[in-house]
Image (tube, rainbow, N blue to C red; front, side, top):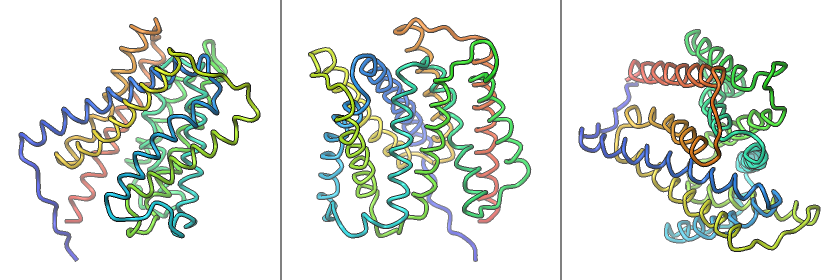
Length: 299
């Protein structure tokens, strides 16, 4: 059976979509900056809990606006719980990595997540992946090794937390594909954020609590504002322009992270990190192009 292609966006809409997508990546990079500042002084549990509570309220309002209920029996669907587990693993590992690893390094490895999702879909969901995309996955993860450099001079053991982040978020995205269609995106987002809040609340009794001062409160507020705005912008971008046009601009996040890391945290990039990031992004773009060609061939 042939597929009816989605209506193509105009050139103007695609340009707007590219601009909004790039803007969303800038906002996520700024969110990371605020989180990195907060992680210096605040325990992980508080960093997870406080923004998650406010973000949950935001998504719960979206659910209410859709005429749905936030808490329903479908919140306990096995794939929803699996997604929530991936969300919790990815988030706690990400905050831990931001606290001790250069921002550019974290962002460079994070760009391998689409390749990790493709790998997981092939291994666990039975998706057909050809040798070209397998090659792109191999090259991309070779780039990850270059960035982290296990066993070499400059290796930071804390950098392995970024790999845990990639694994957790890949699990989240793979589980999202299996969630029943009648469950809305807002519900899924609300439940995922709620799981992070529960994780943070569970960690706080085992950590030394810190009453946030004005600076720390501002860092948490900045992370919340820019993270929520970035989420809204990325959703808008994918609805404005063609996905095949705007999605590659997700990689602009690394550029913003490098700028912030250099200007704000006085980080420096070495040749290994630059070469590894180039391999990750290049292989990701190639894999994306192959996936697009495969879908067009099915139309």
